[in-house]
Amino acid sequence: MTTNNFPKGFLWGGATAANQLEGAYQEGGKGLSLPDVMPGGKDRMKIIASPDFDFKIKPDYVYPNHIGIDHYHHYKEDIALFAEMGFKCYRFSIAWSRIFPNGDEETPNEEGLKFYDSLIDECLKHDIEPVITISHYELPLHLITEYGSWKNKKLIDFYERFARTVLTRYQDKVKYWMTFNEINSAAHFPIMSQGLTTSNGADDKKNIYQSWHNQFVASAKAVKIGHELNPDMKIGCMILYATTYSYDSNPKNQLATLQDNQANNFFCADVQVRGHYPAYTKSLLARQGVQLSDIDYTDGELALLAQYPVDYIGFSYYMSSVVDVTHENQETADGNMIGGVKNPFLKSSDWGWQIDPTGLRIALNQLSDRYQKPVFVVENGLGAVDKPDENHYVADDYRIDYLREHIEAISQAIDDGVDVMGYTPWGCIDLVSASTGEMSKRYGFIYVDEDDEGHGTFKRYKKKSFDWYKKVISTNGADL
Ligand code: BG6
Image 1 (cartoon, protein in one colour):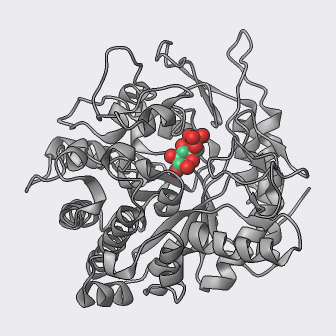
Image 2 (tube, protein in one colour):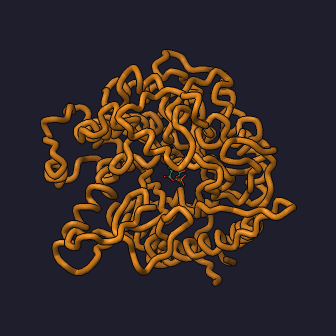
Image 3 (cartoon, helix red, strand yellow):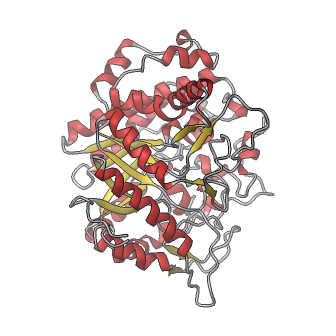
């Protein structure tokens, strides 16, 4: 298909997160972070969900985030490859535990900042616009073990200090920011974004809502700091969005779908974009056994939310979901991190995530209609098993097909009138999977020779999709 409606300046690029690619988990003064104690493998989430999980490194597990893809020592080579593809932007995160190793120090770790100075300068040298996620699933461990994580209001101050440090340092170099990665993912798996699991209070829903409230306040503070430093800064929220369908026209399923959307897709963005809690907050909390009076909030905090909403909506999109509350024994979409009923019209990835490009067009329209602000697809992609040939070449036509169909959906949404800022496919270079800690779940245009145990040469090889994406960018999406 050819299409030529992508606006001039459309931000084509790719996305990563510090903890999933940097490695060097104890270098440069870095402290331990949550992913450093998350074992690799398909049972990662089960192990963490155990009531006995104690946030400690154990000799009998492998910890892939310790090594990542050793981007810490390869970042120049990696950014040069992104530049060769023609990236206009690169979305990455700053590891909080490199800047404040324990999270509660008064002064930042200069060595950590130096690493990001160089990383950012390297991007700018290649005319790549940095797009930074301030916090991407990477809490300093100490903030979890000593403070009980985000349910403790003290984390607002620690985050503020971290955000102020990096926003100030990079105010003249970085225009695009996001405050928290997939802030709403705590509705499904609170460990990653809130540092909460069964062993430290995740099963009590009021902790989830208190953590969100604290994060909303922290996010608003970051927007305030950023805009005061540089009014041109664009600071977005970042949500996990899964277009959610009703299984059928039964009004009970329709109502359940509406409520599911409120709980899982919209609640956090409603607060962060509109600057106030939505009218359905009380009933949403009540459905989960939480009262408004359970939440510790002040008028001053609510005023801050109102005064400093985000500038745009960043979101990840991998899959859609189906709601059915009327049939028993329905086949479930187990692979979907967000659950739901299996959709008979969709195929799934190797990891069971249901693939739905049309759902992306719907998502873009829904978010744009609801918020009337620009939207940015900051994650999308296919996690697949790649089989390199003897020259380490991966002919990943399946990935090209996936990305092409999703880019077409974006193009159609642009025709629908949606203001789309850009597209940064996830894991533009192979990295450690967040949900399973595997290397074998690959998303990249660039193959990294490394296995699930962290063995390999760490050499980088261009996949077939590398040249394809280069052509897409050079034609501004006209040649897919
Ligand atoms: C998003 C996260 O949920 O999905 C990323 O923001 C993550 O950190 C990505 O890596 C893909 O998920 P996974 O589990 O396949 O790595």
